[in-house]
Length: 274
Image (cartoon, rainbow, N blue to C red):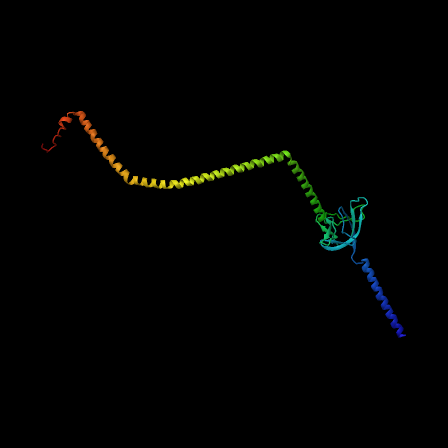
């Protein structure tokens, strides 16, 4: 009897253990969780390549849900409908924006949520909508593609403008300008050579004139120290002779007989005797 009881307990234990394992497997495989989720919808105008069902949904880098379904919008084939299941504890507001992002170099895509702080009211479904719709913003790749497209268009416009500018007449005018510039450069170079020649000749003449200038300085010094004083003395004597001759000429005009008789003696002065 005791043996049957032990077998019964063992069988109940084994059945309970197997049931618990099966339940755990079903729980884990079906994604059962105590966390409550709400469904939201986003519309993507760009390719969702790399985004798969069960891909993560992150809010400021924190995992808050997963992608539930991906379909093409029947009303607008250019849009892709992505259904998200997001934890109800996540503050999804009217200012929340969704962006398709890839992770590193692996290329694994996920949906990134971020609140721009414009409107803090909770996001709700509008009349006629099955789920609340989270607005989207272009991904980095999309923005890069748009920027490259604009850059390509700008470069194409520049190329067209450059081609229209460089027609035959403008090219000929540019060639003439370059030729004139070359001629001016050659003329300036020739004049520069002439100027260098003149400077060299001036230097040579200056070297030749240097001894003459030195000799002239010595001559001027000798004139100042020797010749000029003697000349001044001679001029002084000539002045005295001229004055004497003037006096004699005056006396001859008054008394021509002086040439025969000679000059009359001067009368004696007071106290003098003849």
